[in-house]
Length: 294
Length: 294
Image 1 (cartoon, rainbow over the protein chains, first blue to last red):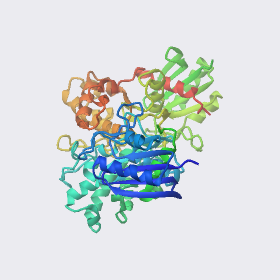
Image 2: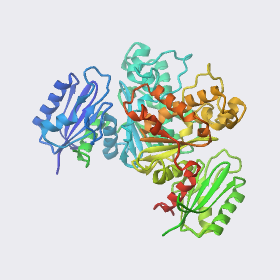
Image 3: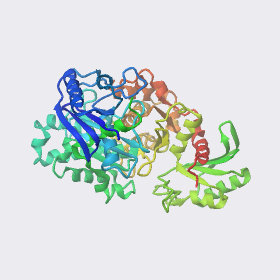
Image 4: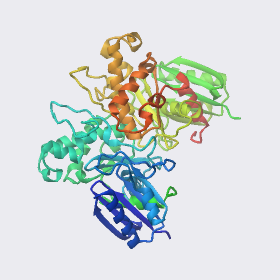
């Protein structure tokens, strides 16, 4: 039986694992993201130590080039993260470990992990959205990972923004007050002057945050018609916050969609990841097991 | 070789055709939508006259139930159109013509038509959006028609609405100023006091309309990452209007997506349907030819 390696590359940390699934993780490690050279070196060292593996899957922060016919396949492309634009990740891992590599976004990897072992096992059109430092989304439609022109960039949808209620201009360097610009962890910190984790008791923070999150979720629901929405990322760990999001989404939809999923059943419709913080790295292992590794 | 029937049910007219594709339409008719009984009777009479056909495809205004395992399959469900809520269309056509019937949304049918014979032949993740009396959207992801929880309801995404610039409250009975509420043909008429076709020379109308349309298109682009967007419907026939939409979408994306499709290539990315007003009824014929007819 094949053994796979998984890498989740994040803007603040990278996670590595070797195994075949959540019940068979043979080695795992999490390191802080430093420079591209040092971080990739540590990934290679981990797999040299913990391997061998038959293939490696990489779920990466982005934007990324995941088109296997492109000369820049396997790169993190235009990220604003200092020093990381156009970092060659996939080909470098493949060259140094001499194994096939599958490369996709972190959120598509997490979606795949939840589909195989977690909260999306019974559906084939769904999305995984991370609400952390930024906002990103991936998922499946008809059982296939969402690709297309490039890959989804959920964080950059525009949402209504009542500047009388909230004059905050938003933090997105491209769009100011897009979804990520208003509702990401970075936006919360800029808006309220403290990190989300230090604001747990501040009701106004979570009321406004639930409103912004729900506005974007309504767009996701209307455009993709997902059978389930999984919300991961640090912001979602705030106590009781998911319940506020449920209420806001129901109110915004206003009864237009008759499905019980967005009515009394919304608790099962918009859920947290069942694999917790391991969705991405386990999903990367799942990615390595697909035919797409090259 | 099989011959198929296609029905596009619209809120104001129904189109029928018999044939195998755009170059082989053996009979076609368009009638005004009156009562459910009379309109369905006329559909049956058309196929009795122009048939026989091996199967019928129906692309319907909605919301619809297209789940073949549902007891209400083939119904137009909660439409606000007077007299039409819960109209049984698919089963009635099947019973009276004794042929298998495939049933989907009008916009998914149009998308399928454009995929087989029109502007989406070379892509497999794209959408077809109609901007007419209302706004609806369908399409494919990875070569499969978009379904999911039910079907997409593009028209009800929320978009930013600057009430200082435009105090108009929107026409959606559920959400007021959602995308359809602000940017549909009905919204234009309510906002400016005349039908869109009588406003061709009014620059302010089309500037605002392009802005609203583009805001929703940005959501579609960020969530679905389509390889192409086809814009049908009466509003899109306004002279030079598509060029305004192109400009607005580019400006709103602000260079964030590096693809030439949303840069200099946007003329080929956001396009009109190649089958013109026949996308829906030809798509219904294509629908009838798929395995899904029951």
